[in-house]
View 1: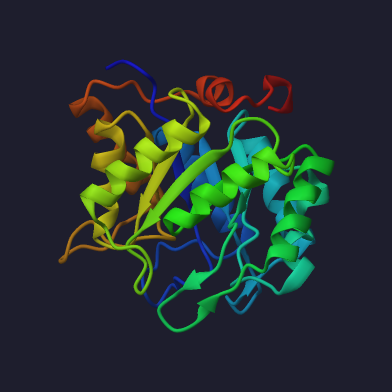
View 2 (view 1 turned 45 degrees about the vertical axis):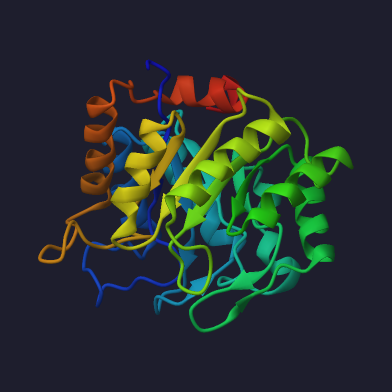
Length: 279
């Protein structure tokens, strides 16, 4: 197996705090520095959230703009993927940063349970976010928390609401949502290939201690991998992760184990159909 593996680093998220792990980057400046280290360690996609000064999540386009500018300067060529997730805002505010025209943005196409709340993605909001991504030439990453979300992405593609081949990410291990189950994981892969073609790229993310488990499954199966402090703040039970770069390094080691080269930013853009001139 020699197909390059794209490593996505989810640097901050909406939930982790410095009280959980001092390495979690909160300010825009901290996020830029942490992402640069992860980029140099092998990550080619940065999945980004932004925070208010008090550490609470926000969808503030101004903060996203400053983060994008810094990443483009210090991580030239890296794919910048902004989050439209529901923890950071409500309604169309979740897509207020899309006019910045990042390379990519996350898109959850259905609702599901989170540990203490319902993660609501109403059909009209999903359709609006997708239309904004087409308007500003932003490639969506379909965050699939459930099997139905993969089929919904296919329906949206058939209706012209998603352009090109969707990039589907399986999110496994969120409490009350899809657990980390190998038979389900393998069925997800077969479903993506059946609906979108044998060569359709896909990614997987595991939450908490399941991060390294799902990283290995994805890399061994020929997919792409997401890591980072948003999803997991520990190396093991005894040790906090000292940085996003340290978690990227673990994924790189798995690529070496399964004889897969780590995708450069140029290769990642080619695999995902993103233009080099955006770099």
